[in-house]
Length: 109
Image 1 (spheres, rainbow, N blue to C red):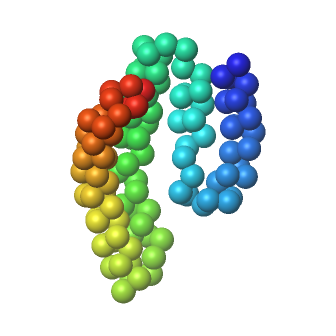
Image 2: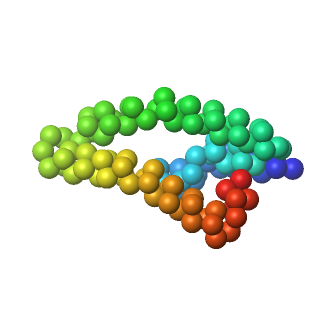
């Protein structure tokens, strides 16, 4: 039954991407969560997603740098990229720690 939900998510993922631009969660991440039958499958799938993210991450900065014209627009975009790239991982660790403390470790499965 969970994989049926995953098919629906994939089918409508383009609509979600158009509606929320790039702020929408990855359809692949939702499929992994919905289709994982065991904890081991979830851990392996999330590991594969991490490897994919590590391969994609180095292309983000050149994309930002070439997408904006030289001058204040590019400087602002690079500043926002730097801020989110440094605050994001720290916020994830802090919020994850708070979530585990308040709700329990099962909240992050």
